[in-house]
Length: 72
Image (cartoon, rainbow, N blue to C red; front, side):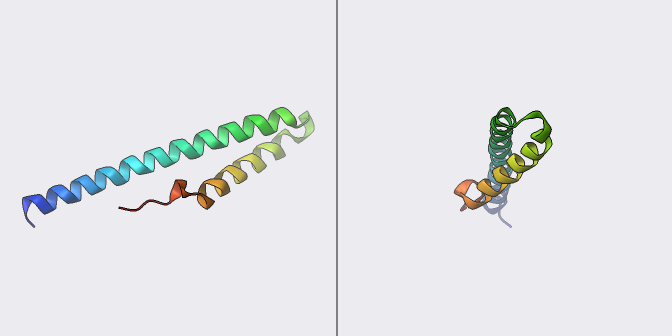
C-alpha cells in the first residue's frame, strides 16, 4: 500500500466517523424534540406511552429520510 492509498483510507475512516457522529446528533435532537412535544401534549397518565411513541417515530423518520444515507 502506498502512502497516498493509506492516507486515503485514513481520511475515509475519519469522514465515516464524522458522519456517524452527525447522524447520532441529528437523531438524538429529533428524538428530544418529538418527545418534548408529545409529552407536553399528552396527559400525565400517558407520558410513558408518549415518550416511547416519540422515540420510535423519530428513529423511523431518520431511517426513512436521507439522514441515514450517505455516499462516499
